[in-house]
Image (cartoon, rainbow, N blue to C red):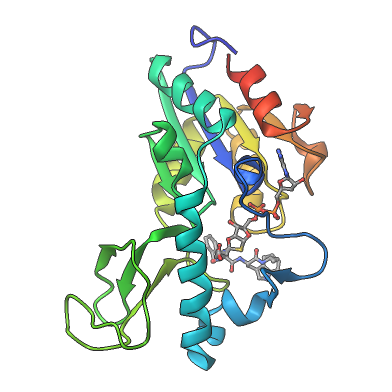
Length: 232
Ligand code: BJW
């Protein structure tokens, strides 16, 4: 799709599949484990309350992993498209890595949070953070040890900037979903929101996601190939 496309307002949703070829593992490999941990241990507020050290170590490891991965051609194709496109454009990512911004994307919402941020459990103040966090780390706003937690949206928590996202979905004329299985809500419902607004809907994924049949158009293959082809 060339930047002189017939569309005036585009929303793109990305998931773990876009970062897979950069070397970041996707979530749903079938064994129910993320990096050898049951999901409910590391991605729920209850898991964090039970064992904060384990959860901090899990996110410290993933934060450190960012130093050894690079954006791939799919991230770059989206950033290049954004630079050239004169209409309204919003990239909504479920990913907590920073590969979209490192590729150059700027009109971007991290709806499930960011590995490179933490927030204070009391004040909710958010801090940029690229170091390890432990239960002894003192919070920068209140000085209390153990108050800083990963700025990640866990199950049962409200994803971020939802008003802006729904506003963009209700105005878009093209919605493109990339590298997401469609298992996790509310993101899994965005295709229906966009379709209800009259947008054309396109799925770019390795294989059909949960809602593959709801899309007007589908292209299956590795993101570096299908995304680059679609957005150039
Ligand atoms: C490739 C590829 C390649 C591979 N190229 N493609 C019952 C019914 C309905 C909903 C619920 C329910 N019970 C509970 C809920 C709500 C719950 C939910 O959806 N649960 C489901 C499991 C059922 N959701 C929530 O709790 C959310 N909050 C919420 O709903 O608040 C209330 C609310 C109401 C109304 C409006 C707004 C809010 C919060 C969800 C938080 C999700 N957080 C996580 C963890 C982050 C922490 C971390 O990263 O450690 O976010 S879960 C995890 O899944 C992560 C991801 O962002 C998210 C989505 O996963 P994604 O990206 O789709 O990855 P995969 O692995 O599933 O798929 C990868 C895809 O890529 C596959 O299709 C591959 O084929 C493909 N692929 N290689 C292209 N090379």
